[in-house]
Image 1 (tube, rainbow over the protein chains, first blue to last red):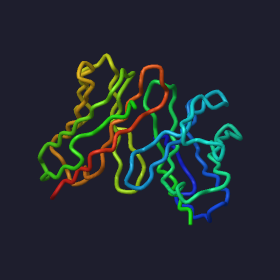
Image 2 (cartoon, rainbow over the protein chains, first blue to last red; image 1 turned 90 degrees about the vertical axis):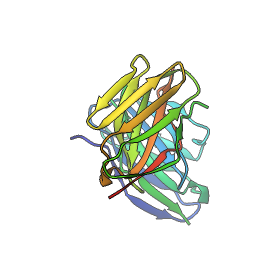
Image 3 (cartoon, each protein chain N blue to C red; image 1 turned 180 degrees about the vertical axis):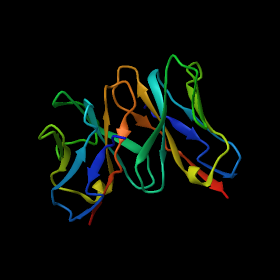
Image 4 (spheres, chains in turn brown, yellow; image 1 turned 120 degrees about the vertical axis):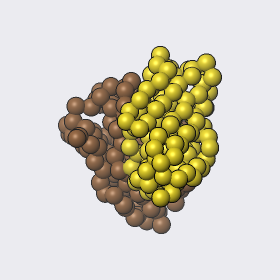
Length: 113
Length: 111
């Protein structure tokens, strides 16, 4: 069964460093998302991406964040200068269209020290 | 906020029993989805119910939706130890293409 894959599964980085989280969405999907879950808290929407551009972003998704679909398969989330409060599980999701099931990856646990 | 809120926060049942959890939300929705998350792992999609549907089944799962009360319930019948996980409802608001998640219900199934 097709699945969303994320790499790495766990990343430890120093405060102020840039990180890139990678995702390979399901191949025939058109909508892509990033969510995050701070330990013990709710899953929060960060950004949605459709037709090679951001369609919506939350207040969390400030200038430190960016997304890219550099080729036909990968979807990346970059955090330019990480802060301690960026420590969270980051989930990539994809959907064939915007009104049906979104399938999530296993997540990347980001730890900023 | 559109976020769904689950109730109860935690549930402990014996294997073989049914588990019921509820979700309430605030505004009109396109659909409501239920996800499962095993500890520290990814979100597994369980079931989607559209705003014009009242009930859906998938295996041992039964989901209901009452749009007049802005609430949904997830029933897991004949629970197994492997059902131990956190369960989240997520709503897609009208005009939106993103999901708003609730805080989840942690279900523990005792063998």
